[in-house]
Amino acid sequence: MTEGVILDTGPLVAYLIEQDDYHAWAVQMFSDLPPLFWTCEAVLTEAAYLTGHDPRAMRLVGDFLEHGWLRIPFQFAPEQKRVIELMEQYHSTPMSFADACLVRMTEMLDGCSVMTIDHDFEVYRKHRRQRIPTLMPASRR
Image (cartoon, rainbow, N blue to C red; front, side, top):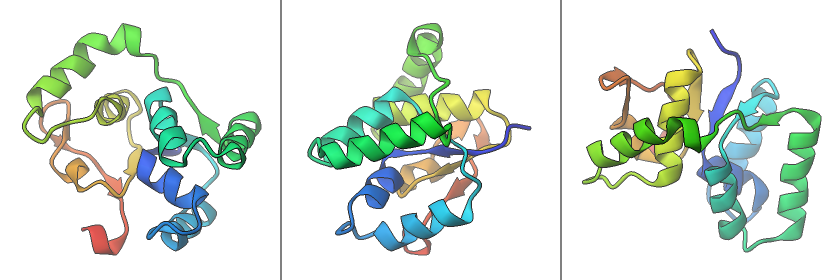
């Protein structure tokens, strides 16, 4: 079983932006959970865009990476076939590239939950039929 939580864009952005509707929830989650979060570069790209490329926000992400609290084990090239399969399977949702990478990560990092505000993770399945455990704000369930 892998330790840590797989981190989606929404909670990361909520943590970084005080005005975000889910900021208090994200701050609480980051303080309650052990400081080990897994993510992918697609999530960081989305976060950079959604924070308006705020250098303070990206500096904080850099600090998380430097301290080892945030880790990026995922590489798209060796996982491209499965990621594309997932995007095709969930084309009607539609599934974003970042979400497909995170679902693939749930298949690779056994036992990890996804911290998200995206209700699509209640629809997505790992290994084609297994529910993905999520950590979401109560108002998103």
